[in-house]
Length: 432
Ligand SMILES: NC(=O)c1ccc[n+]([C@@H]2O[C@H](COP(=O)([O-])OP(=O)(O)OC[C@H]3O[C@@H](n4cnc5c(N)ncnc54)[C@H](O)[C@@H]3O)[C@@H](O)[C@H]2O)c1
Ligand SMILES: CC(=O)N[C@@H]1[C@@H](OP(=O)(O)OP(=O)(O)OC[C@H]2O[C@@H](n3ccc(=O)[nH]c3=O)[C@H](O)[C@@H]2O)O[C@H](CO)[C@@H](O)[C@@H]1O
Image 1 (cartoon, rainbow, N blue to C red):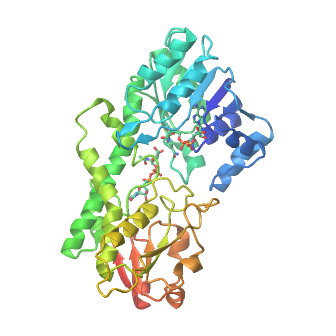
Image 2 (image 1 turned 90 degrees about the horizontal axis):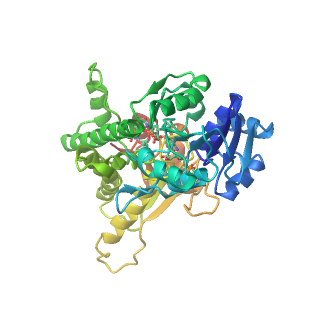
Image 3 (image 1 turned 90 degrees about the vertical axis):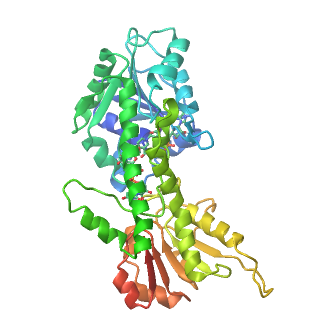
């Protein structure tokens, strides 16, 4: 069994630390954010996944996973820190990864293994991470210590299952590094550990997986726009097209959220000028909030004085994460669209568009998103816009909603609701 220091205790690092602790390793979880350490030390594990919460809490409680506010020496260092997109430059912000590498270099010993799990542009592990580790430690990667990339591929909403079941791939700066990384994961997961030829290939493959999914969704979103021009039901058409054994189109929606799909594909452009289709698919996906805002505006003619219930700010169904939220983006677009409309001709008071946002999974402790209860969102609303496919919304009764609302428009951007039931309750229904 090994000593392991996991750097970064967020969506990826904390479950990973728990997995390794459950498998008998001596794990220290380190996070720069003292609030994270304090919270976890009090036994407060924040995840919407109940089974995962218990899985993590158990190893913290019995001391198999210790929490640390400093980097500790360990045989394995796992880097699970953020890699956000610098949106203006369309480049990965590697500051967190390099700061983690700097911290590791201070305690690195001969024979240790460093594994980068964070999603990074191709060349990062063999380039700047290696330089930071070697520069500050005086040790040589591949000779004195091992260095590899092994990306995480868990699907938020199903993290515990996927952490154990998914295949992994590992790519080292040399063959010994690849094997050192594979040795750690192999006994802990049911999936297969695949050896990539090198760390850069492993980084590339992770980005390719997310770019493939994002591009496929971009295709579906473009089809939604085309199908509307022909008066065709997109989802029905996609369902029929997918009957072909070699066709597998994903579903349209109000945009692609989360912090992986909207971000990772652009990392492919770090060292290449050939990113074209992938970038265009990103643009199509980013255009969807504006497209939905236009649909709503066109329906009413003028949004001034309208009250809209936006249902869902989580980036997808049944999760509590609102990063790059299509629902919040749509709310911004609707406000901007309304403000661009000509001032009311009759000189009456300009009331603007009122948006009431609801989400049963996302917490809004500081009130920054202005979330309200479902009842408040529906009271007096002219329209419901469903932006997240939470189970709770599927069960919403059209007659009960109608009793609270003053208008009768349902915009179902996720294909979630029973369209006929809502039409039977006298609603106009717009879908993608
Ligand atoms: N969330 C996902 O579903 C998912 C899935 C696959 C891959 N990834 C990738 O995994 C990485 C981590 O993502 P996440 O969602 O867990 O991020 P997160 O924001 O949830 O957590 C990251 C944690 O790292 C801490 N941190 C920042 N700098 C640090 C440092 N130098 N040392 C120690 N801790 C530090 C932060 O305080 C934070 O608690 C990213 O590269 C992401 O793209 C995420
Ligand atoms: C290749 C892959 O599977 N990667 C996964 C992905 O996880 P994710 O949670 O970000 O992915 P999705 O579930 O696809 O959601 C993203 C957004 O796309 C919208 N969407 C989805 C399907 C569809 O048909 N139409 C849509 O519009 C959805 O609503 C949401 O806004 O990245 C993680 C981090 O790298 C990976 O670890 C994880 O394996």
